[in-house]
Image 1 (cartoon, rainbow, N blue to C red):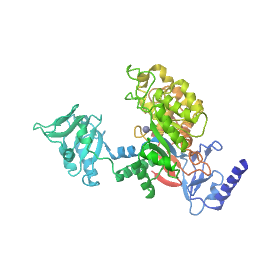
Image 2: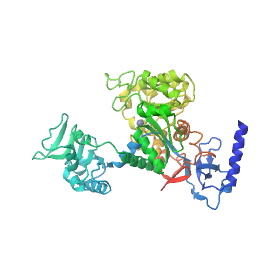
Image 3: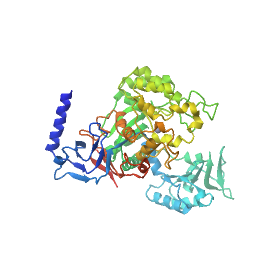
Image 4: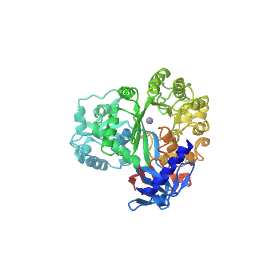
Length: 542
Ligand SMILES: [Zn+2]
């Protein structure tokens, strides 16, 4: 075996010398994540792969090689977000964020601009307007009607408890002065009884319920937009955590049109038709798109007290959350997955959901294995259950920013006893458990630098709490970067292709403005991506 590796190594070296590189990066500070050669200054790329790191790079430069002088910039392997939602991110990017808009006129201008680039009749959506920005008076439909007379417009308020529609939207919804207020909702009306365009609480459904499901073109546009945003942020691979057939079709179309700048590791969302089709055909492993995972959801979220615990919520004594899938169901689907060579990834937040998924997995996996089944989030784990991850080689797919978003209220929800197993990253690592990181975007920002910062500091972006929340579970910069690179690759069976900068690996890497591994962690928030390269191709450059 060693002899074969040696021969392959020699072949790679001599090939690098024989043919010039497509691309070289020099004068860089490269954190390779390759234990054999952790820090480098230059690399060469050919045919979408890294062919040389440090030694042999100069020899590989040819007359047509693109040469990037990094001018001392830091280079890391492309970030892998192991849990995001691309279509939802694209939808969010498409709906205007009106949070900081100070006047109705400005909002109208934004809507007018949107209408000019869209087909007549297409819905225009936005979110997070706030009438306290302009003195507290609710706006009316007139401004939006004038801005977009031929497009229905619906903008939701910053707290999600009110919506603002234009006349076209109300016409489509059939809302008139004779429409009664629905139970639990209110239609704001002018003195003459006409709806003003503001819909409170349940009344929002009158309009929002009429917004049609996204068309294939819309889904494709959203995915493309999300992928561009990911490329801008240095993400070269995203694990799309649960997609329906329509999104998969849109990915294929984007690939055909060469409009997908990053790589996607897609999980099939649940055991519906798409899953049954894949059981017949088996896993699909590709260069830009791989489908070899089924995503299950075992419980809800903690913020809304839907995550499933053994004991009640500390701040809601009658409620211990809701288990959505039984152990039997996970086991049944898991057996199909196992027999057909698929990975299983189960969303589990509460200790009961985690244990239920672990027990179902253990019944099938029966000890150490290389199936790489995953628990997504793995947020609150009972202390004795950490060993079940290790014993069955189960991956804990975590999202660092969830910890720093939730830390304000977690202890109130679960009490001091359960805190020991909450967002317990060092416990996973000490138990030898593989732990990729991600963001769960658009729930959190997709920016991996924000994630790195949260992982290293366990502080919010203002530096609170001082010293970090449960600081003994913080990650070192090396552990954090590993979780966004090597571990993300491992969780997708791609550690031989991605996650490190070494000869033979895919040329997926990022140039950063700052040395995030060495400087004070607060500087990570100010750092940005200067360039993103996927398969040797520059997909983003500032
Ligand atoms: Zn998710």
